[in-house]
Amino acid sequence: MARFDLTPAEKLAYSLTDCNLGKGVTMNRQSNTPSDVPVIPRNREHHIADALTRDWYDNHPFKTAWYNSMSITFSLGEKFFIDSVRAFSDQVTDPKLQEEIRGFCGQEGFHRREHDRYNRTLCQLRGYDLQYLEGRLAKKLAFTRKMLSPLEQLAVTAALEHITAILAESGLDPDNPDALSMDPAMRELWDWHAVEELEHKSVAFDVYRAVGGTDKMRRKVMRRTIFFLLLDFTVGTAHMLRRDGKVWSPRLWLQGCRFLFGKNGVYRRVWPAYREWFKDGFHPWQRDTRALLSNWEQAQAPAT
Image (cartoon, rainbow, N blue to C red):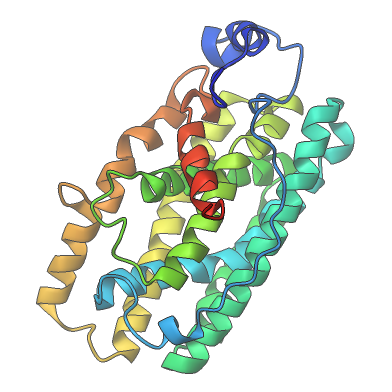
């Protein structure tokens, strides 16, 4: 059997869950991550300072700034994810999901460390205002913690994990036209992060459902969350381009719009997967991305 084929037991389990049959079906287990996808942290350090001194994505200022602005959101965002999931860990009774929560927190902790280094180095080398960029996000997260219930905060985490998972899936797709456009060191970091996002893509979602989260709440939360996330990406990109002296270039912004919204644009590629979130009975592993994980693992194997 191929590594990523569903076992008969898994096929039966998926056939009995409400992620396939919709409302009114009670699951006998809380975790729905396939058994052949372990959620295990990889403690990797990435040496990217040299790449950060230049436009490391396709030698293009906008593409580089957009990815850098995404990184800015991760350091504080990953801590929010960990906290929101841990808040409910004592209510999880499935040993498999409990183990996945530990793996999730470990993976996100290493992501936070690496992107914190990334962000600090980037801003020091290129003169970006890290206090401004992270300060905006810190205020937003403080407001979220104050105004939303713990369950709503978990719903925010599940929604953002879906977004990062579909971006990761797109980035790892061998048919992605921009797949080879990154500096190799940056590609190594982003691929490592993407793989682990796919591995744990349903952990927050499964915890949310296990503790009584509803479809109505998660849909409502996603509509708000996506707006503020895209706003953060745009503000961060504009700030970096302004510091680079390129923010007022209409040609650059037109190229950026094509990069995001064009035929093979980032947002356009993930739009169908994003919309799946709003379907009845949705579950992240209905998008089976195990082949992408296998491809990455095979590429890590030392040559013989």
